[in-house]
View 1: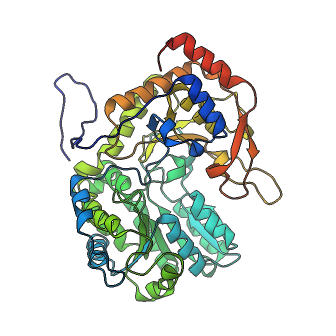
View 2: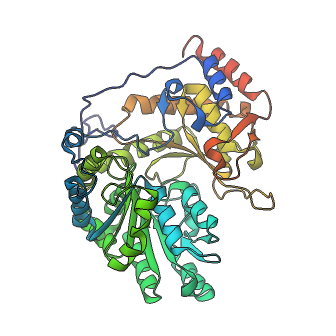
View 3: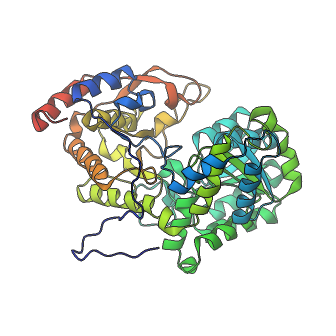
Length: 482
């Protein structure tokens, strides 16, 4: 990776690319922002993109493609069967992961659906370093139970542990002995654990997990959607692998896994997904579900153009200069907020900057969704759209009880190669203003609460008139500014 220092001594991330295509943004007045978030039921997922200034909702499917990817999209082979484009993508995945079989899907959750249908039976236990919302939903739907076995440091918001996404190995050994290996259809290891701040696992930990599972005959499944950030952190933070190339680290990890699945909306800067494996028996078990749920075996719900772009994007993922920009921008954002006293998840992980909403809004009851309230407040304050990753992202127990999430985070995703540093600084400024006025922010409650994945399309309302007070304070402090 390029090591570039500034003569001034300032430490700022330097983009290793130039911008060649731009998209116009607009920032509507604060009063209109209040109106729009109210119309969206205080759910940032329901905002219209035209009303958003800085979109930090997700890094999924919104990363900027390279010129090489865009050029590749023009040469796709549109054959329904026997597509040369599919052969090229499959070959690239085999080259990088060492797998010989590839099943395409339209995105990561489609892969999760196939995995759950083939392997999960009622009463099964699926251990994970940490769950993801859709992964858990697929497993629970089929009568399985997810058991989270991340190390204790994983759910401590402020920490110095470099690999907070590590599996708790002793806890995993205990679970296997108590549950029985035959009741564990597979273990899922998530790269860049999404719901606890994009925190990575170490390669040493992943290899230890694999060794333990193979001793007990348990399949290992890697969710590689956020793999590129995890690869960067392994090389940067793990002494034993600092001199390894990204490609070599990737292969070492892949060789330890039985199945690798991914959302190409994250990995590879494209849109799509797929499952990779080297075992023909596993391939045959899952193959029939691709044409049933996704599309033919040579596209699986992806467009040929996206597949061409993904082939190039996967190769770009092996370039440390390319995959370093996201983590560096995120670290800059986290460090600048920390300087201002704003509670963020540390050390900075991948995916985005994560604000600890529980500490930001300690006066808001956890049943009134502090992270969701803070997301609404940030949109009002600056037109910045983030995503709630806390109790609102959980779902109620069958008896109506609401489990309080272990972490209450506002995720501000930093899509790759999308934002300029001035836009990041703008977001920092508006978050800082909110922090100074945090006592004005109140809670929110559900108006319409779906039973499954409620955070996607549920609607909420404020528990008081706190949003109007926030708008009045904005006008007092910023005058006519947008």
